[in-house]
Image 1 (cartoon, rainbow, N blue to C red):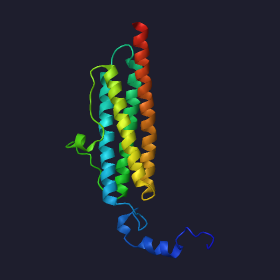
Image 2: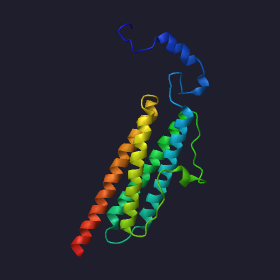
Image 3: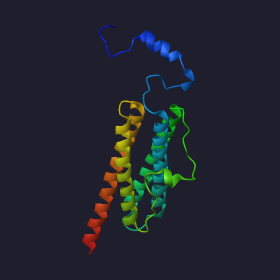
Image 4: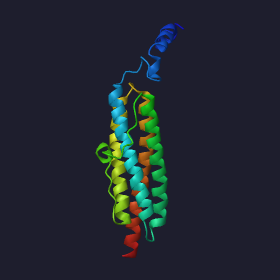
Length: 185
């Protein structure tokens, strides 16, 4: 394989694979600060749990003429946020860490806040703010991970893409509320 200078000699790869097998997926080629990555992923996990809980509350509490469309979005987003939490927990375990599902300190670990909102407009606005927080912090995490941990970076990028869709959905709902309010005024 002399035409592939980027590939480490296969004999070397085989030898390295036999060392430290108790580390599972974390091989000698892993160059990120594993403990820091696990900590960042646990913060993202807390964020996803908080967002799941907020969306679920909003799903159950939304009422009024405009609520049916918002309720469907809240429920879909809650389910997707839970899926994100599952992806993060799986990756944390792959890295040899423990996902932190403890409710104690959940809000202090989360990037997003848990704001209930008293009206449908407030609920949508708080969800949009939380999505915007997640977008910025997850983008920074993905950039930090770079080429040092491409698998965790890809997990964060996949979640980031859905968070951007969620923000777009919430902005659309908010605009729809504003338009219906203006028509009724």
